[in-house]
Length: 192
Image 1: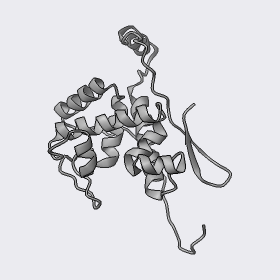
Image 2: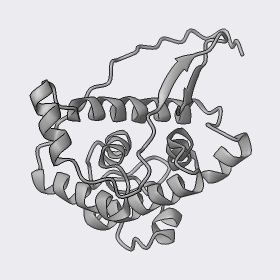
Image 3: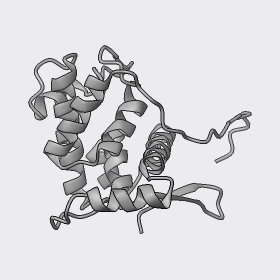
Image 4: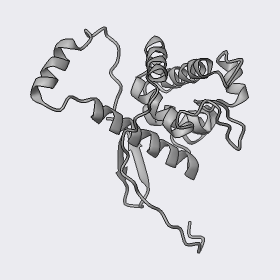
């Protein structure tokens, strides 16, 4: 839809951002592992939500490091949204719920984390809200960058990583999110 307004946009290549608190990183990774959610996804959501600020409050009332709205916090057992551990546990449980609900479809789960399951179900995919589409794009870009940063660079490192990799325990490997631009100029996300 053309509005006549001038819209300027800038595309930045996503990159993995290093955070300096190793205890926070370890806590996030531990909670993600306990819930069976890819730690790169959790970090990507946190980066998009609060950029690791446990005291963040959004204009819509979302609170803490994973920006839980009060009803979602209660739904997933969070009594103090500003306690980083409790907030991360609730946020990761919510991500686990969404990944299960959408059968591992990362774009839908990420969109629902931002807009809610009702909106994703209503539109049978990513809702046509600019905020949600940008959110999915940012999280997907951060997730891709984190995965790439985690890949060993040299053949010797890759070989060592494969030897040290955990045994296949029958769990599904997370599917990557791929972005493409349609003929209509919109960005479409899919998992292969």
